[in-house]
Length: 158
Image 1 (cartoon, rainbow, N blue to C red):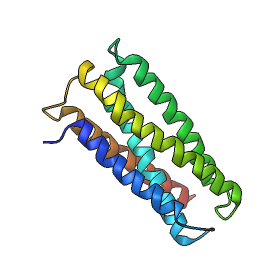
Image 2: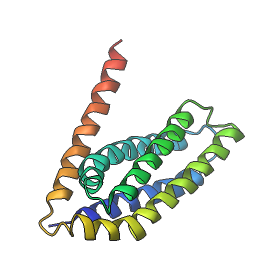
Image 3: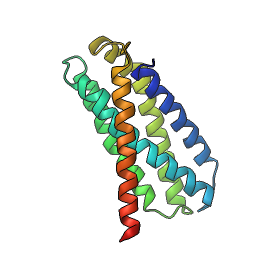
Image 4: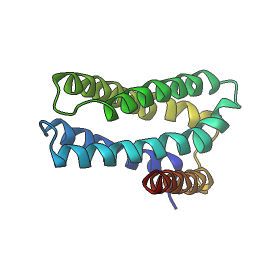
């Protein structure tokens, strides 16, 4: 059985890998498009599931509320940058500059979660030894992915 902390860290490792691979690409290449799309898709589902399964219970505790609010606000900022990048020309220097901002900010966000917020959460909501929070996160992330798939399918049909 896995805990929410191990589950989130595993996702973070995948996101760090994708960010590094995207940073190695250049121009409006199929590789850059594929990697960024994969990153966008997974991070969007991850953030929505994390807010519901992890940050929602943390926000209900007086000790965890400030950290949870801060992280949810960071999610919004990162989401805005990710959407902005989706609409930009991937071969422009502006895209690369904006991507570097996203990479820096998201890596900082993950570090902050793993090194500060997880510690606070363990004190406030527990260690998730039974894996209930992790299970809720995994189910919610799958549901988010399904919603994205349905939206994409609808867009293709219209």
